[in-house]
Image (cartoon, rainbow, N blue to C red; front, side, top):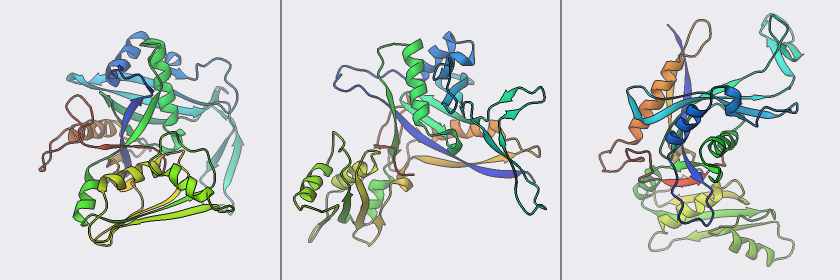
Length: 330
């Protein structure tokens, strides 16, 4: 029987950093990617940073290929991303389990012709509208490199006035359903630590920081909102959780306690993601076609209307009923 491994597919929302440009209409990701595909013939043209005089240790990323959905050319594109660290020595391990010590060799990797090779970490993505579904590969260096790559390519081959891109986590309505099923929010506990620069837009952090500074010598502040006869606002609880999730937030701990005793201390459970199983061949290769099929099926699933009459994405890949959370806690 073939070995199977689990792969996680994560939904991201590509938000353009438009600032105060209220007249900005975000272009569809899949249309931009098709423009990039039409104007590039070499992978080096889809490489970030541009491959000129790369310093050793530079984290690099490029798109290997881009293709529309088979049989449905206007229903998204699939593309393959490769990440590597240029010019870095690698630890290489020979799994000789009869040896008393691990057989590890450090150095550059060479092929049979003596040419230097780089270690690639590859993952696949599907894009439609503002939605991006990513095959999670923790060895690829983080999705910030993907956002830099996309912004670079879109500026170079599509429109040089397009702003940068932030890939946001998507929190589904499951969070609201959990709060409702738990009888509502009984209390919200927060802890603020250190004096890092505050994000420009905050819901509670600025006020908490002012309170902490009002007592000289205090390094942290804990605060609780507790309901008595009723429940706290679920919308306010979600805003606090979103602020806690921000990568620049100095908020250290979060606990949203529900009436039934349940405690929400992370949004990870409520992020839009899907786990799939993928076969591994006897030679050790992944069945890539199964990953691609899983990506397309998840895109279709996100656009299906459930029994309660809502869905995460519309047919064009735009968010319908979901909340955006900056990527931070993993």
